Image (cartoon, rainbow, N blue to C red; front, side, top):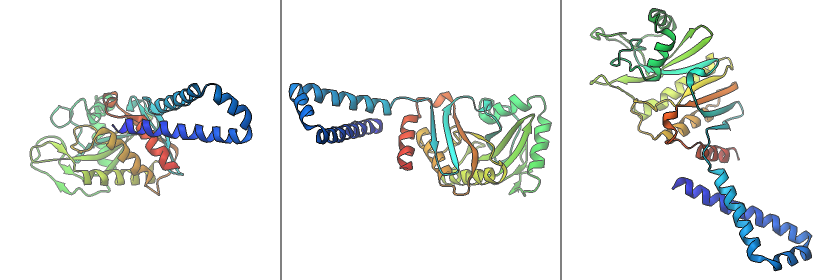
Length: 277
């Protein structure tokens, strides 16, 4: 429905633009145009409508990549692809304990958190643990859960970010979810907003202008009660409204192919292009 409304608006916009153009031409060349219209008025009308419909369909066609100017300091690309193919900095959502045990209980193997550990530290989990320990050494955990029987016991605030490296790859691990009483990872919408705010503050202070690659944070099993489309738009608004954020080389928001039927990049582009104007 939303896409249909935009289609109709764009068709009407195109008709208005063409009509204005014809009006100007009529004022400049009244006699030739008058004679031309009199010969085939219906054909002329149909031609205008056809051009408007083509424009309407063109503006709402499915896209796999868009580029947006979110602020004077940040340009973003939104695309479908593999997050781990990104260069420079890659953001990985993790839990509040910064766990490293991929056992499909603490960390599910098919999540970004699990794939990150298996792909880069699968044979050297101790290196990852040590880097996380070093990265968080200046921060005080909000709790030490001595009753926790698996993996890490230190719990950190939602939104905490830790930098780790593997070869030439730099990763920002951001604490996105906490565990509830049933040991399931979750996050509320208000906590989600805080996570994005803290993440972009960390990026501003530490990225040194390097390109940042970020997934659709909250799109997994985190419990954020927003559609994938709204998640993307909220993420983009969070970047656009951050006055301090400067990314000389831009930011890539990399979407997994599994959300292709839930995210319409043409709608996102129209929304943010209108904001630019």
